[in-house]
Length: 257
Image 1 (tube, one colour):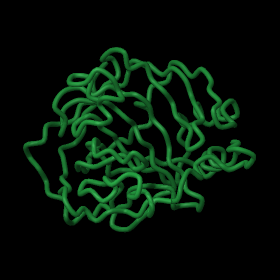
Image 2: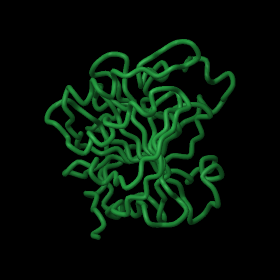
Image 3: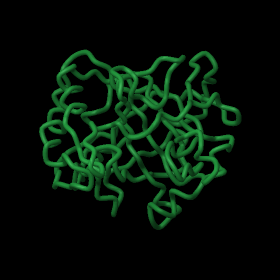
């Protein structure tokens, strides 16, 4: 479990480990952070995959069509994939917490620094290699854009299964209010590389109870056991930022088509 990870991955005791509990009153507004520019309109999705931990949508990252830029980032970072974290208990699926509060789910949009590195793997080992946008999900109104995802989950019911999933833009998964917190952190599962610039959006997106059940309900097969989507691992204890400092950035802006 997470408490034993340090034995195989000593970096687990490093000073920029994730996830964290975001203490909003301790965030420092940094006026020098540029607005973050999100360019997602190209719909470069390729496939949807069940990797045994989560359901992941993969993107064509061979060029700079689907990127995030600005903010704390030095150049464009290409979107590689996004995935959701869901908990075993309703309301407790998010990896990050805000002032101790958990959310039912957390969406991670994973990008890599193609300006400095040649491959995703190379970037994932570098201090400035990855940028992950984290978005909280909470139950409320129906989010029509989520249905496109939940409608195809039956196609990736089992671990290792993969299906074509094209022409989907994650822009429809972004909240209206795009203020964010940012901090230097790490991958939240082994190898725990301290390679992630985290950009956590303050405003959650709302999804319906039905959408949560549809995402949470189907089973996939892991060995001989059938387990629900999102029962991925024991949640890693949140860090209290021993080293890095939490900053607030300007409002994010979306690239115009």
